[in-house]
Image 1 (tube, helix red, strand yellow):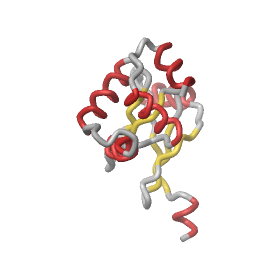
Image 2 (spheres, one colour):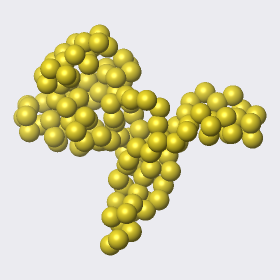
Image 3 (cartoon, helix red, strand yellow):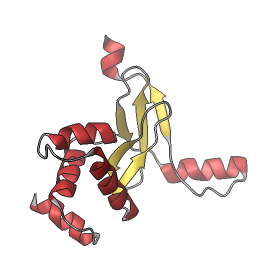
Image 4 (tube, one colour):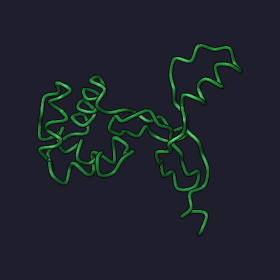
Length: 135
């Protein structure tokens, strides 16, 4: 828990039990929707409201501590901010995972081909995960 408090303080984010619970859940189960976070946190804080979870997520996003992952056809997922990376989504079960690709190379290629000035780097690939493929 001390680790999470330090991380929040480093970003000048007020430490609250609810925020600590959100960070702990995201650290243990990356790529959670607001509803999934709410259900997990409600076990520790039965009186917490969905609005409180939204408010805390938004406050931590404003400080760059949490990032929103916008997956086409799904509700947004959230994760702790880390180094730039891409995501891969299973088209069958909806599981979202990080995938390390050379985003700089992909971005440069896209800029060269399209002649666009790339302002945001978000790459989401879709496929079938090994578990779904096996079943």
